[in-house]
Amino acid sequence: MISLGLEDKVVFVTGGNRGIGAATVALLEHLGAKVAYTHRSDRINPYGMAIAADVTNGSAMEQVVEKIEQTLGSIYGVVANAGITRDNFFPKQTTSDWDAVIDTNLKGVYHTLMPVIPKMYERGEGSVVCISSISGERGNVGQTNYAASKAGLIGLTKTLALEAARYGVRANVVAPGFIDTEMLQSVPDKVKQRILSEVPLRRFGKPEEVAWAVAFLLSPIASSYVTGTVLRVNGACHT
Image (cartoon, rainbow, N blue to C red; front, side, top):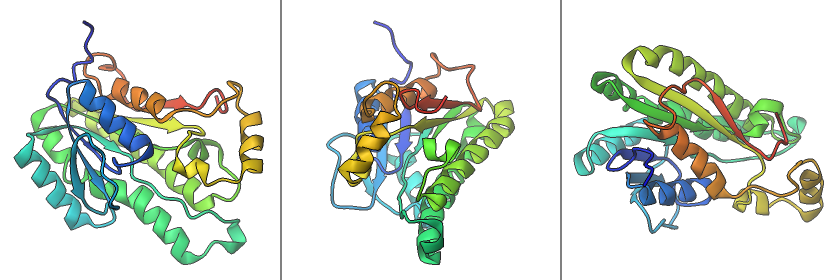
């Protein structure tokens, strides 16, 4: 049987209790990884070790990393997935909505990675996958705050890849298009039909399809020479 080499690797996923995060946790466990994930709601994923924590709290994330390593072992992979939206047209964007999105989607990744990256450097291995978005690459109406956070995440990851390579640590981005999750389901049907007409594959993506892209980039076998890249999972909506 062909393996991705993730058996018994410890992987930490933020926002792993729903949508893309939940699909990623489930797939990684099926591939043999030992997975822990954070969540902020009462909904629990049946897969992985659940830890209630908020990525906007730096000290809490330090405690999460410590708990994972004490319970499961040294962290090999991180999937920075936690994210929120507060959509509105730019003139109607409030400072609180702007700050909430930036604090979770961008600063939250800083809080997630800071306790882990030095440990990866010391061990000489590791793989980071940050979940950006098509909005961060091309923009999206009503999402100035979200697009800014996701574009910033691409810049963060590309720079980290350059710095981390000498330590044997890789960093990559998965940029999903329009994926059939709760975030998309909240969009009015009329708008969803317009979006769908722009997707050459003529369908929305599935969370599992994004999860496979994440697993590929985490793999020490399949993507061992891949770092600093953006892997688009968008049905050719943006190429």
